Figure 1: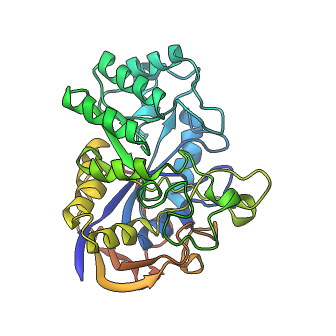
Figure 2 (figure 1 turned 45 degrees about the horizontal axis):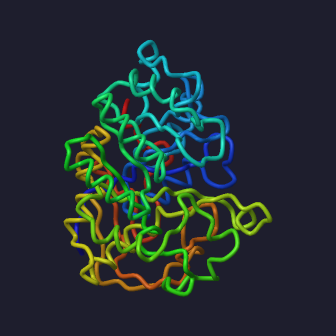
Length: 359
């Protein structure tokens, strides 16, 4: 057994409110514990989106009743809600501000850069801004971080040009951090060059944003691993029926597969265990200003080898892009604040045991 700290996933979609047939705080935080994750930070592009005190209450009340692990809830930057200086009751209770500067589905997309400015000006500097931005909009977000001298965290980078630009920005002292998802590290847009993809990752099942990239992009992420601050899942569950429909929504589930995929990379000497701890605990804790979780740890059988199977997972969506992948490293036990929360495939923490990290 190896012992890890309680891990942190700073980027999940738990679909509550509005789409709980895909996931909710109950099933999503169960999946988190099964994956060795004891804090999840949930995104605001729900139905309705989380953008003010009233909608934040909707999500936090559901989490208070249902969550099995600790949690935070982001609020979304919209065209009309940038008066954060007079709305500290919302900002102080949130995990941070999420800005959708690129392709997204919902009411929170900010197409005009004049809409970005008041958010960068007014959002409290002790709480993070996270940007969904790709390629050129990512460069613009980094420019805004430099102009307003405040940190910005770039979500789910996937391209060579992105990681190299972030590297250059960091070298010049700009306050930028970033995360990468396992599907952008282990998959490409070429189904022939990717490892085995269970059930064929074709049709709607390959739809994700940012899209899967080229082998050259994947190689650049691995070659610049020191630039990447966090591993995050961007856990974005949709049902099998939705993914296989004529209009498939983008997104992959990932809470239960991130740690075994990374531990397999450790076994293959592509990463070290310290890399995993740094990018799934130390760095996200610092970047997102998260509290300590006393008496919290994860026990992993590092020698257990098995195939990933959606049928054995807690996520409500019923599928995984990693179906059939052989991995090494299995979570056996999770202790959260002194209580055994997960052990040998069973969730033991009751619904409502999870705490709001901003409470």
